[in-house]
Image (cartoon, rainbow, N blue to C red; front, side, top):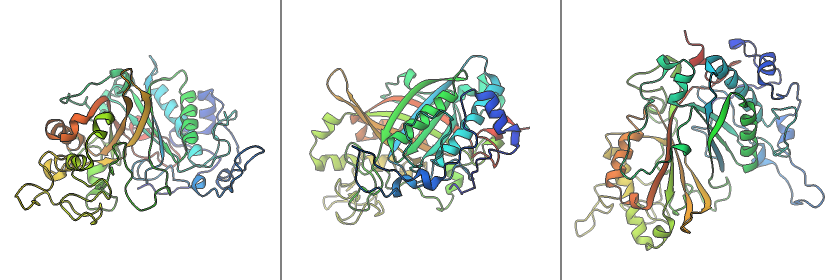
Length: 427
């Protein structure tokens, strides 16, 4: 879990020669110097003439999540309402020095943006009236980055291309990449603004490879306490692990139990999958059939192995039977096939968002899930689970996996330093 550390307008001190002067000299992109916009001021908006005249409380917009801590933010923080995912490829000849400069610029900008402060002198004003809105910026490294930056000997062994899974129909142009940025916030304008800033700061160093926008439930919008639903109407993420549980850090951080790279200690691995849902086919199923495909009741999220009103947190009993001896949770139900008990204990920390990008040429919706999962080693997490799901999950016939990527997520930027410093300055 991230822990708060003070952010100032002074910029980083001297770690890795990461100073304001360095950034201004290398970025060439108008990084702000000496701005005095405070978090409290940034969190309050005022309606102008002809605008929205409803009372403004600023509560949602003023929420600030710490940028620095033991781990990067945007992993164990409560899920926000919006996400912008973007992957970048390094330009030819950038090398280690160019990568370092880019990560320094991104760190400086992200720390200001997450505090609700402008990161450029000539801000585009997309989010001018908004506060930090729980903004988090999480950066990861693709396998190809290590070769381009001359860091092949520091690439984690677990950071290999994901194997081909049955049913995959992947578009290489919408997956992979040298760098990934996960930008989350409770307001769409805040996420787009942050992406535009980072993209401008990458000019000449890295180009955008692909981008995806997603959404989830807005905090406070639900009438009762229940996990957010996906576009199939099912609660999604009920059994996600929680910080503080036994072995949480070992399973989800550390950089791989079999071949840890010292620089990745406190880091994680991010697996991304763009999963289109065949919603027309799914919605044609009766609700009781949908529930058997998933293994949970749609209304309450409670498992089929328990009473209807037991609640979604009720422990799943995979051995429970109906009076006729059949399994209450079918053998091919999603929650059974995905359960750690069905995968030798494999587990992931899921942080997914829905997407809806209009219609495909055949008239069906281009909609589904931007699947995001963090784990200490994908060989012990995502890979065995997805292999099992692709073979035995009844939900698979309603899904199409269309893009994919895996990235090593470094730990948080050290105090006064920048993201990736542990990798780039390792002895």
